[in-house]
Length: 478
View 1 (tube, helix red, strand yellow):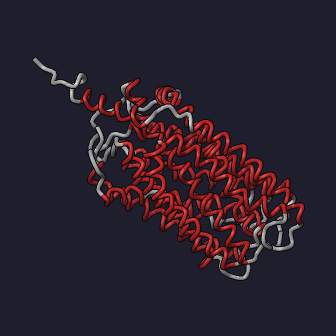
View 2 (cartoon, one colour):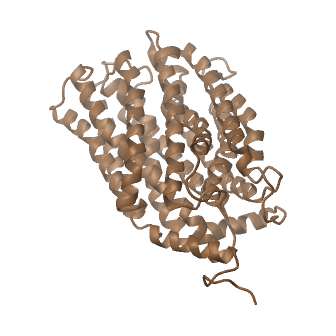
View 3 (cartoon, helix red, strand yellow):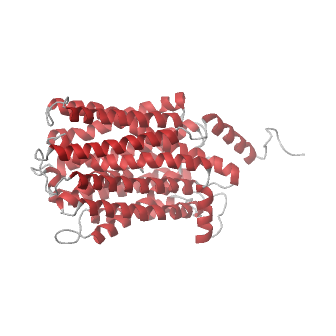
């Protein structure tokens, strides 16, 4: 039975969504700044940096299902999820600060970056998996689940964009911009504070609602039983279909995020003002998503919304690059070029977020389908499975960016405006070609997600009746 029936209180939506700020801070740092920091600022080879980050993601992805299973099995007076949030918040914040303050002189080694990246990602999972697993427990309503994900994505993007704005306007605003080594230390410390406040604040905000002893005491944890349950959950047909589509979408997202600063600096030649405006454009796309995704889900359903948005995102993303290569785009660095690119980016990013939020919300419906088949709820297993897919895919996306940068021939000491045209052309063609293939794969599989609104609502009604001992709709008894 869900914690809340009917409309969700506004304060609950805000408290739940606020926990995603930590994920947004992490995502912004890893996706936009970490590669260029360790490559262009600290001098590590781009291929080695992307390989270390990809390996850290893969390790984390393997551990995630275990964390999800442990979260499902946690039995305490504070419920199944809150103990994880309270315990992991401070270690995560400290590890995040260390990531941006490497304790080595000169260029860090592959092992140093790999070790701290693994620690950060594991601790983030210990917060994020239990946090998002609360969502299907809070409400079973098809549309209210979308609402909670809208708030999660809103706050997640706010956290990431806040750190991006601070990077461009406070921490790295000197003449060297993103290449200023001195700006990354306070950037990391500020992010650590925000992560801690987000995780603990969200837990406190939801404490009264979810902090109670679970209805059923799970059996003791064992590795064999955990993997058996994980394998059973991951064999759910709806989850497998979702996972294939999400894999392509997440690879594309990881590649796009990690290549952003490269194309902004070297292709579009943004000045400091343009870089400062960039987070505002992304924020505007999140606001548009907030008002677009609900009507889309009501009209098209979640699977078709995800598929069509995936195609729209890649079309609007590619148009400026194709015009640039064809010689029909204004001069890079000009006001016309920047404004034109931001107009296409606004639509492309809005569409991309709709794809992600639609897919994430679809997972909640898998929980009841699995419960109907097995009699067991496994929110943690399914959402850790989503993180498994996302992290593997994001690692591949970051790895692809590293290889694209390396194959394109971009030097480690590249200066804005001095990169040869053939280098930029190779970078754009490799990036654009990979994006098209991934968008088509994501759209094809997400559109085939088998659980409709009508099927979900009928299943929830039947399960509610069964929980009351009234499977046939009448009152059982003598």
